[in-house]
Image 1 (tube, rainbow, N blue to C red):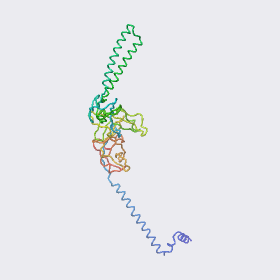
Image 2: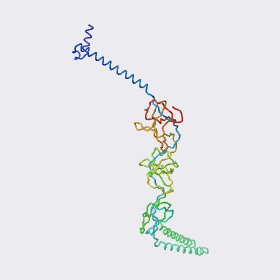
Image 3: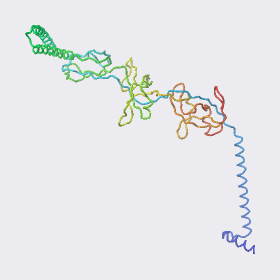
Image 4: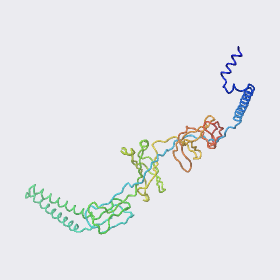
Length: 375
């Protein structure tokens, strides 16, 4: 009965095509399957053991490190801007007249008070002389009135009228002298003539331009600070301005706006620059690098030490407890003698040779580069 039960179970479990095979074929196929499984097991097990043996025999990667200590450093804030003249003015006519003479050419350096455009005087000189004569006449009449007032032959009202006539004559003479003087259009300050608007024979009305004068010193570099940066900059902070022309000029912050621009939400900044030789020009693009209010801890490295992760993050590899680790850093400044970075611990063992050959978390053997102790 046991045999009948096993046989019935065998017939219910096995597929039909298998039961239709002759017993000797079933035994042969079963033995073949067992042999294949045994061989497969034997192939995988030795390979696994061999891999483990190779990992034990693989040497630890040797890297060279430098122990770097953070020091306070000036973290420059860089903004795009342009140069701008602090004093730039269109010199205009204050009286009407025909241009009789020009005393400058474009590009000339002029002094404060120098005549630029000279207008025809016409009858202004005669009117000025007449006004001065009237002043003399009014002054004599005032002296007579005073004597008569002392003797009682003039009232206070008559005396006041004589005084008023004299003052009116002086005012008229002063007005004519001013008009006569204004026929000579003068530079308000020393500078360089950057534009000429008038020619000989031109008729200038009040407000018409004669010339543009630009004061060469001091000069400005202007830009805008973001909301995040404006709190780090104050008046008097040192700044370095690198012009697109290749020049670099040192200066100081003279103005930081208190109110943000309504559209861009940025704050205007002005850096005052020396320009004794008048070499700077207005409107030149520039990088304005400002020293912020506080110093930040930073370490100095060679640019060759930097590593770029697959994600695009820039950093360095350091050794901590015998393992290599990637640490993102911020580049503070760069120069011919090295690069300053922030973001590392106060003391860090930075891999300077072999950083491209190790992976994050890999065990390494560190050899110190220079003074210090190996980690």
